[in-house]
Image (cartoon, rainbow, N blue to C red; front, side):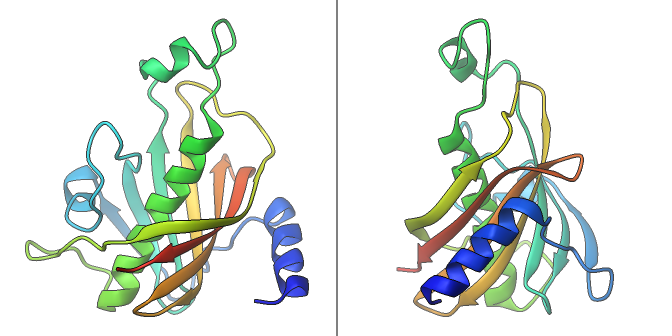
Amino acid sequence: MNIEEKEALIHSLKRDVIEMPAEGTVKVNFGKEAIYKIIPHRPPFNLITSITAINLGKTVIETTSFVDPNDPVFAGHFPGMPMYPGVFLIETMGQAGLCMSYFLKNNTTEITEISEPVTGLFTRVHNTGFIKGVKPGDNLTIRVKSIEDDDFMGLMSAQVLINNEIYSHSILEVYYP
């Protein structure tokens, strides 16, 4: 991706919700137990609550995340004005991206008993923006669109949404060891 393409993508991520096209989208309802089969994250750092839609053709996934108001992070971030840390939003987008990688690498919209987690290490955050603050008890929708994905690396754009409004966005790069 050249500089002009990256700048255009950043501009779009700030203003336009990543589309989950009707055509080709498979509605799913995968909860935490299924998610544990496809990414390595575990409590207390598994941040994806569910996977709700996958479009392999357009390389887009939709997941959810519930921001637990009892999360101890809120005791210090910030007392009297709790705000979910931005680094957790980036991590949430990354975990949703790894879910997308699983479906792309296996060319499926299914999770089975023999599914194995995708191993990926996020090596670079090309850009991230925080537009609105996420609060305790918020229900997040995370949409991720794969830009590139092969056996070596992946590049993806992502957004955190609440009620279809953009709260955060990112361009993330993952290395597959």
